[in-house]
Amino acid sequence: MKASVSDRTGCTRREFCYSMSTLLVSQTVKVREVGPQGTFGIASDSFQIRARQIAQASGAEVNAAIPAEKFVDLCKSFGADGCLMNLVQLTSRDSAYLRQIRQSLEDKGMFLELSLDPQLFEDPSLLSSAAATARDLGVSRLQLATGGRRTEDFSDPGQWQEFLKHWQQRLQQAEPVFKQSKLQFGVENHQDWLADELVELLQKLGSPHIGATVDFSNNLALLEDPLEAVQKLAPYAVSSHLKDAAVSEVEEGCMIADVPLGQGILPLARLMELLRRAKSDIHFCLDMATRDPVKIPFRDDSFWGAFGKRDTSRIDKFKSTILSRATTRSFPKISGMNSPQMRAVEDDNIRRSVAYAKRTLGL
Image 1 (tube, helix red, strand yellow):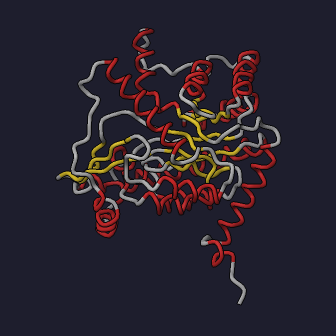
Image 2 (cartoon, one colour):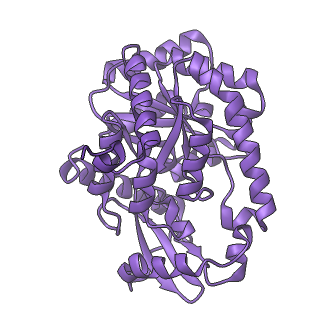
Image 3 (tube, one colour):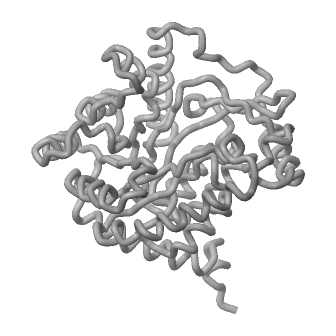
């Protein structure tokens, strides 16, 4: 008997059709963008300490973003083929300035992806302007973290349902902008969406222009196995956040620490393979946040408020698949360090990650 699409590929017919549609869009866009020399980039969140120090030095009241022209050079100096920056890092929308940034990228053989702030989706004119800026820069892939951490910012299921409804409406309204501009847009699996929930949202939207920005470790904070999360999201992948994580068990639940690539528990090569099978030209942007470990208090009732009830089956599975590989070593902290020490640790984490990406992961 002839095997079905699902039998042969491990995905549903709907996912297969979605992937093919996305591939056609990416091929259309690829003709118009500058072809990158590689697929390894660095995200602006990898330089949070540096950005804060820039803000402090300039006397800014809020954290400053590293200006785009300096950020491109910074990523290149660390050995990246491209970069992922926030739209706010552009210090101007003037056409001459945008040509300068694009020329710098082309001269260095680098790709660029842009992340957007959620506020842009509240105003169609602002979103259209952002899309036009992306096209002027030669960018074809945008992304968004919708905001909010499920277990911290939502106290009951009703709040979460309102959040879900809001973003389904906003993304439906935004879809024509991405379609007209021939852009691909990824919704990040931030610490809000369970993998199945994000897949359901993307299926409801049903657009080859809206997919997922697949973060390698974020679903750990929701007690999901990253391998299973990436397997579910891969058919919808637009872009990715390359990172590693280590876990330790504590009385309230567990601690999760961002660590340099290769020093954690994530099967990085396997995750990359899953994404490449779904999207052969996907970029892997290092998202190495140098910070204190994050506590995930899943044994406390407050953790489960937005879910409505404690999910014992998810806890048991997390214990067997993730906590069974937990480290007994204490994680280092940057709190208490002075600014030069923090900056040195951040730079070292990025250098170690870049070296591992190139030597071991072949990026």
